Image (cartoon, one colour):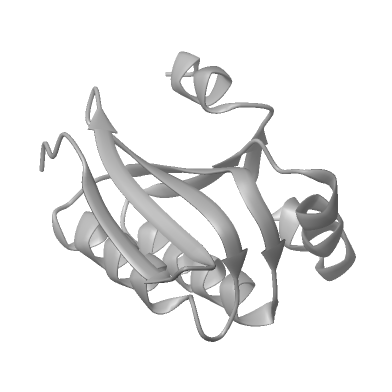
Length: 123
């Protein structure tokens, strides 16, 4: 899977775009991730995992809000990835979203990078 960019939008409140770089899928999230907007993220995560991508970096720098549905989509993808040899990693968590991950304990199960560039620099 070597897409230059695959986009999907859940609504005017949320957008997700996927690109690959050196075999790593990078999903860039923007807006509010919640029950109404989560399906496109789930679709792109499934697409990447179905294609056998072993490492997915989710760029959260543009994510303003994430509720339990969004969190569960990411956690489910993480479990699916790790059932093989893959990994889902997070990058650029902003304070409001980072707080949700910390309160729920989810930040302890993801590798979290300060930025996408930092994530891609790790081999």
